[in-house]
Length: 507
Length: 132
Image 1 (spheres, rainbow over the protein chains, first blue to last red):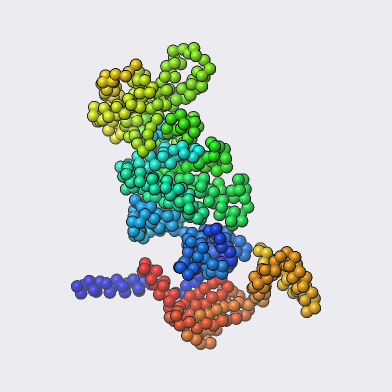
Image 2: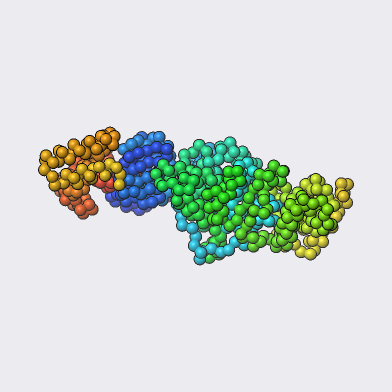
């Protein structure tokens, strides 16, 4: 007992002894104007750009960030309840960049952009903080993207592969399944040692609630952090949300881990920044966005990277989402983000309404990393897939004008129809890479040619169930080694033929 | 430069080397200008800015000292030296406030700087440093 007492006293003495009392100097100012999430402050002569401020209110301090440094005043965004701040209120500069809590404690939690929990699961015990703004890793610390990040979506993993450390834009009109692709990708990371972050910017709270329920049901919350700045949150919170999410991701990057971060969506982020910029009276440019709206997204997305082994070897893969208006990809923000990212997945309304879901336009979607981010087995089958998809698109357009087609063309059209049928996939059912390789291999080797087009989905489901018992080892070997050996091909062929013998609808 | 600052600077510059009579005439014209631009409601802010600019031009610094109990003249003079060194002030005008709630020590407030050497400030810092 006395030992414990001595230890406690020693600890108290040590901690108090380490404290060096000194005169504390604080740079201060006073609020001149306040409203709509921004404040104009006088004084603060030594404040720096992006420095965190503390506004004094009766209900305690409210945080803000200095954004405009002018000759006689400072323009700041307010991150708390700005209605409590009154004209003339004292503002203190903190000398620090805005920081958010980071760490393993955040996994499975829903937090706001300041890192405050929103899920009612109690306070966070995180003791580490990261600044929300950080200069992206330089060239020397990076390495090229070579390791795949499987989305579990056949059309993407086969034709638009995403690698760890890549930035792949998901773009399309509203209600075409952009978020669904991102959520499927998160669900597919189960057991793959990837930490996921979903940053909701200006999304409806009802939509977030259903996403959370889905993630929980799929067990994806065990490795996912949700940063939520809902539609009702003030513009400053929407503005800092992706940077806060990125800071949380950088913690895991520094631990040498792989991270996937979804920014849903950057169109609303740009709109919130436009609102702040206009309120701060920055000169408006095209579509009333301020001049630095490109830098707004480029500095965020440049923080996604794959570090080399000397720097831990971790990665941040970013899936930014952009919502277009009436399919206009040539608008200001979409073109900006297209040019920043390493490729885009373009979702098309026509495909969606024809029942092709996910409605990915294979022609306009690209991945600049390409087959470098694919396992060898997928590379082997996907090369043919891309060619067949391209041939089908060309021939299908041409075939509309003529009825008399030669055998070879008819064959290619039939194969193409089956291919696009195989690309169809339900929501929240990502497919393991081994099974993806199997179905594409079966297609390119003609095993699906005598299956009626309208029975392809049924055939695929049955085949997957059948192979799980008859060729489970082969599928597991493909996933483990990433290769498709001649032996495995032979076994797959036999297993598929066996399954087909049990069917009665073949042509 | 803000509008208020411009008007304050203008009246100070215009009346810098004028006689009393000329100054009154300039002030009248200046007020008419404010009235025509519907800026009379900003007059209190402009007056505040005039005082601030004049202090700056004359090298006057106004400092507020909040102390737990009345400080000796020697300490006040030491404080004045610190402020002079930091601001190059020619004259320092002190406003002294005795507030026992700060526990001990003092808090100096000048321009846009606070120097906190109070007991309550140190206690708060200690609490922060041990993560309370």
